[in-house]
Length: 386
Image 1 (cartoon, rainbow, N blue to C red):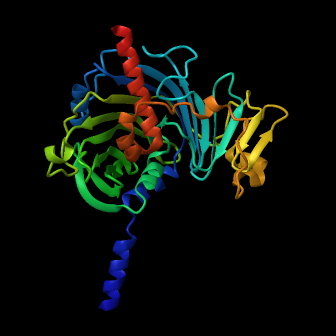
Image 2 (image 1 turned 180 degrees about the horizontal axis):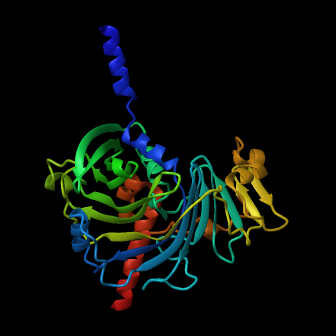
Image 3 (image 1 turned 120 degrees about the vertical axis):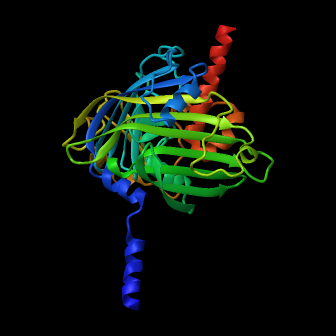
């Protein structure tokens, strides 16, 4: 009997977690998605949109024109992602400007190594770094953060307490993971509602950070609603439409003393709404690769620089690793970076300190840069109207 009990306990412990099922689904995604991404803030009626999302109704988009529009392509071959992002208008967009929530860029990453460059005529450097980027991205599974959802969750909640519960989302049975961790003066919390009917993709995510022990209890909140998904020929599901709503809640701990994952929050500001919408979905049968390298003449890697005699041909991440050799790793004493375009390195890094503390802990540097950039743009828009 004891042996049977131990065997049963082992089976329970070995049962896949929702995040494991999500990763298993992702390994079967072989697809290319062309998309548009639009940013709204200010007078677009956040409460109406969010209420429609919470009721699982079809969302009637904001009546005003977006502040920024981007077009992009995301490709995945089961192990490696490829992103291409380009600005495509918006009422605050200015031709050839570096202002805005996202850079014009191309990136390839397998989670262990990333390579990226800016898509500008004056940008000739290809950066290679195992740490990824210092700017936010958007894609089917990258929600205005510097990394894909599961990578971002792992980096932000290493060592966190995880609670798992069953719940219903819009009449669908879901499996919820709740991550909590204290980081300095802030409490971090992420609630992920996985839907088994679409490959354990998240249907809803709420991430928040709020002050503890320092007299500051305001919360920064990011909610993501995945409203549509599609399976590729290889069997894996990928989101084809989502909304991200970022906002603040004043006096969170006193306003919601009995808060749990089922609580509906009332934003204290309009926040920022981002919509991701798929334009085309095609199956992929080949590895993804960097495609737009015409202007590249140098590669900046952890182990040093590589001068190129001519622009490289499109290449996969494996081909780039082969070209770099030992330079994919940093030496014990890294050489001084003397020739890097300083403006390029520091793109999307300026902003107001008032946004910084909460957003750094809720979503890392990338989210801080995103919301700082939007705050600056809002002030610029207000100044133009006055």
